[in-house]
Length: 203
Image (cartoon, rainbow, N blue to C red):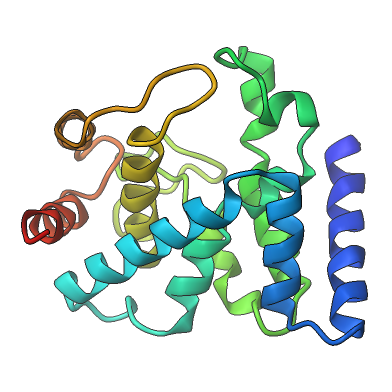
């Protein structure tokens, strides 16, 4: 109930900020940054990685504004989670993890409530599906997962691993790459991982 109520409050607060002259994107970004300290920086990095992967793939469905918006706001649903879970300095319990997993559905609902951002909602909803079918919330697999979501999954995982967290130190780039390869194709689309490694190899 708490997550549902917070979701409704977020949508109302974003609409209120839009009414004062902000764009929906700016209003949502500002609110998200207030609730989650690294939301803006993480979202911007994931968006840059995702756009580079899309260019490398050159695949239909990877261009356009939806990719950038979905990548920037893939974690916006975490703003509706209890504060204790966002800042917890140790690994989550099974029950806590079940609550955190709600953030993809919540994030999609928040975007759906925004007229100019709703086109990115499906990609956010599927951003934690696993290529091999073990993800959430709908247990999609392979090509059932939108290509934009498969791209965001790789970009998000790499950036998350290479940043410090309250419960662990950051991975080196080499260790993060090794983890992407280890989890491909169970979690990640091998084609997307390959495109990302090509991008990293040039930088």
